[in-house]
Image 1: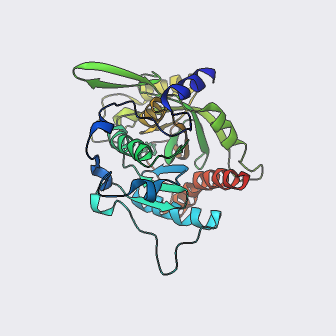
Image 2: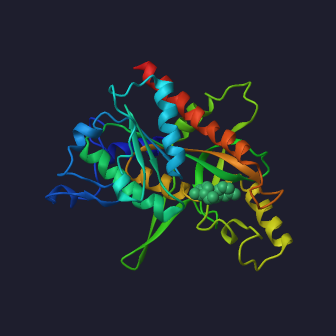
Amino acid sequence: EEEMQEYDRAVRYRDGSVRLRNPNIELMDQDILYHLALGSESHDLVEMFGDVKFVCMGGTPKRVEQFAHFIMKEIGHKLPAGTTLLDISQYSYRYSMYKVGPVLSISHGMGIPSVGILLHEVIKLMYHAKVRDPIFFRIGTCGGIGLEGGTVVISEEAVDGMLKSYLELPVLGKMVRRPAKLDRQLARDIKALAHRDDPYDTIIGKTMCTYDFYEGQGRMDGAFCEFTENDKMEYLNKLHKAGVVNIEMESLSFAALTHHAGIKSAVVCVTLIDRFKGDQVLAPKEVLDEWQIRPQQLIARYITRYLQRK
Ligand code: R2B
Ligand code: URA
């Protein structure tokens, strides 16, 4: 914790606004946030985004649109008369972004490269818009390890497929490592908002983040499989013993890049399957849809409480 706070002070301005660890940006005439279809000169980013407090990310455009409508209801936000929610980044044809008062809801696609590109641009967006102390959430889905489908998992840290707790990226032919740390207090605060009478568990645990959905997650149902059922079970047991409770594909980058920027963040995912029991996601669509609302509700509770405190 102490280490995280030290870190925060180094990478944020005194007023809490996001400081970029890149001296080049302020020297540029304009900064085009290409994959968001926004620019620092073409748009008044302070006017458009200066009041943002929460950045919520999820995999699909539909889910983040739903979350935008849901959070609008929950925080009682009213759109100006005669207007509807619109996808601010629709002309990027890459990501979708909705803004509801202090909440941004943005799709990140699948996997570390996709969420990484988005995070570079959203962190720069926070800087250009002079946003203070933003909190980032990933609201997603995952596979569970020894957990019933529909369980909500709040990540305490992210590890890669080799159980290493940092993101590695080749830069100029050298491997750069960034610790994939998440805010433990934020994780506990979110967990405290789970209702005792929810008909499912909400837990905190380690999250494994992989570069692939099939072989990379030990699935035997991909186009290729070069290991046995025994090998797979041995690996899942090893993960389980190491405290890994779920597997998904973005947390490593999400944790590493937000931490590097000094931004508080959390990852909350619902399990769609127990990997000890199978590989295929078999639950009916209506069940999956109901499960996916669970992490949204938890984060909506956090946001609502936070705004009421003000
Ligand atoms: C969870 O679900 C997706 C794969 O189906 C991936 O984006 C993830 O992390
Ligand atoms: N997302 C993943 O990455 N893995 C799963 O098993 C389910 C959802």
